[in-house]
Image 1 (cartoon, one colour):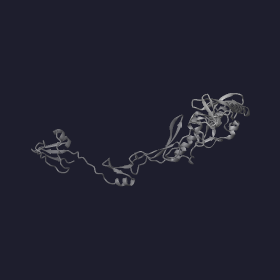
Image 2 (tube, helix red, strand yellow):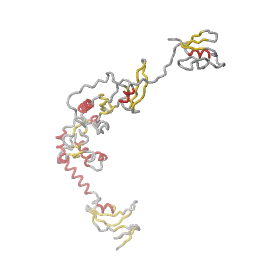
Image 3 (cartoon, one colour):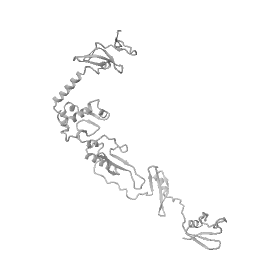
Length: 376
């Protein structure tokens, strides 16, 4: 085992990493580079070696880059490959000056360059099948045959179905507005159809669950229509996608729009209402021209049975009251409340609904009085 000291660092064929020794690389070849001698350690403690390239240029490279193959020359190999590639592109197809060529290069880079930010959206986890046609990469004119001339300056390449890649039959020229309408969207979690939501009924007796077809135009959400039949909502959404060139996530039901059911007719159970928040039926009944609460039931059958029974209600008697004082004089009052207001008392004049009784307390202003209700 040979060791040597270079700039205060021990260089050894069998280095001790704990002591900070560096492995000997002098005289070894890595690609086009010949290692001349150890130079220094960088801020991370990595060994940096002076190398001589085949082209005659001297460079300084880290040992881990040399041994991993990340660096094989001073840079002239990559420059030659890039120049050759650009030359082949420029001379092979002659499409470099076409107005659609920058968009073509953006498409190819977006899919093929692993360092692109958009790489997370262009992989097999998000795109079904091929990412791009191989023939388009080899010859841009094959791509031109598929998509044609660029309509306007602000148009870019768009995939008709965002779930597929840049393949035949799935590319077109589109404006930014059209691309915004055609973005990848998740389907509704309730009815499994994109662009259709479910609105549940309220407590009104004429309310029913309905389907709302929606779409986004120029960044604003718009209601396309309300339907009781899901098939009609699907037809409405499908026609909207066709009009604005949005890819379809479901097939259009056959036939034209069907007549919607008429829920404006009298409900067979008008006084039974479903409360979706509390999950029960509220039962009422019409008595003497007014609606009286009967109770609540968990099922419709229980509610129908409950509605048959007449609720117990406290009926107030607002008839006139005749009062007879101890001298036998009669006094007529509009109601018991009028008596209490006039004499500033809260005396319980009638202790029962049917029988008349005397006030027995001598402290009461009505001591010795007799009360009776006037006949209607």
